Image (cartoon, rainbow, N blue to C red; front, side, top):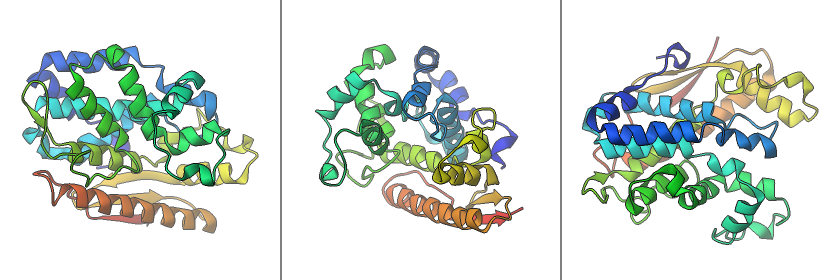
Length: 292
């Protein structure tokens, strides 16, 4: 189904039916944080869209990837997934004060052996999933999370959109028990966000209403935005993703091929985390590039 055809609200409808209280918690969070995600533009004015519009696209893609498996998900899984998807990029727009605070709690490994500690926008970009997790923890009261267990589940699904090891049974248990006694399948929820984030690549993500490619002075910026504008559509079939691209530029075409290879790598890792470990399935197996 073409992404641009319509939005899929399966999770939102199911959550409202299964648990109106959790549904209200989610919608209240969306309303209360509707401008927070756009703060990333203060640090990254020429970066690809990481606003609430992108988060809603990630939710939409997650709906499509779940398909009829929605009937097997409980209300808590839907709530955690919706909230984790909506909040997954909050780390991109944190304040300098929060950056300093959160940095004291994040394990950067050997990162600073090759990167400057003074380039805090770069640090945020490279570790924004960790900063998102810290944001959720610090402002959990504002998010109206029901308990510590819910907070952990939302943080893990949010962090899981990049870099984290979804095969780690401590960080991503298959049946994580919440305070209400229900369990949530964290590797599946995190994999859905990771894959949905990866496939949000079409021209719609970087609308000409928001960005003027001709105004960019750096060649790298012009290339990446030109690449996204050349990708006109993403079709999600049961067994594959079809990336529809329109270009006669050899450089952009090569970029499209590499982007599809990157998507395939993410897809393979998500399949490994989900299909062999959980009762759920990711049915898509390959990424195809189609010139139109």
